[in-house]
Amino acid sequence: MKKITFLIYGCLAAALSVSASPNDTLINGIPVNFTYTSSPFPPDWQEAPISAKAAPMSSAEARRTAAVLVTAMNKYPATMLKANLKAVYFFKSMSFYNVGYGGTNSTDILYLTNDGEEYGYTDTYLEQTFHHEFSSILFRNFPKYLDTTAWQKANAPGFIYNDPEAGVGAIRNGQSSQDPDSLLCMKGLLTQYAGSGIENDINTIAQNLFRPDPRFWRYVKKYPRIRIKTKLLISFYHQYDPQFTEAYFRKFATKS
Image 1 (tube, rainbow, N blue to C red):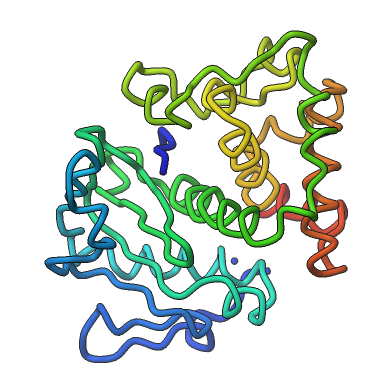
Image 2: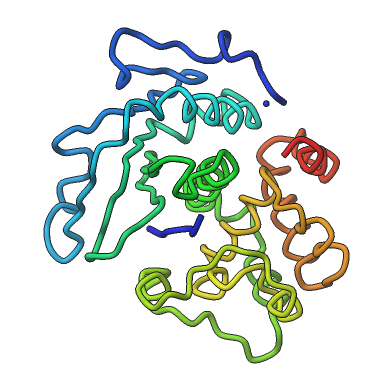
């Protein structure tokens, strides 16, 4: 679980099917829920110490959110989505361990938040959060596709991921920035939050492959450690489907 601080543009009509109820929305065959339910989280998440809580997203945000999800999902083969993702839930806000989260994931479900563009939930933020969390599911499902030894060797000598709570502590302590940082890039970390754990590090590169910050590819070129990690993660996706190449990801930089 984690928080990030913050159209392949397909035809919306072709990719989005909306029934009379927003919580029955299907995007590329994946159920996406925009209305609050009393128990959206696994039962064990609702008990202490996790104590999962959520608040309903404004219905006025449903159409924009759906359009962003169409953009995000169209960047993956439909078979990849169906094999690894059961559903997506959106809320205005959610918390775990009494800490606010922007997004998290379970075995095959994504839980994301949107409190409106005026509060920083821009199209870029929403899409990056989707890719960030989905990469966790893929990493768990296909661990052999990523050379984690080479990944960790790309970090500066002596570096140790600094959050034993795998991101929760970073959020609680105000160390969860997802803004690319040139000083951190010299050490092999794209952002502050990437330093909290290897999964969060992977997530941060993933979100920038699919919806790159304007600085991302420039930093890939400039900083060898970031370049190594980016190539390793491209290889991860490429092993799942050959369409995922550096050229494939680079084209998103011109469409963000």
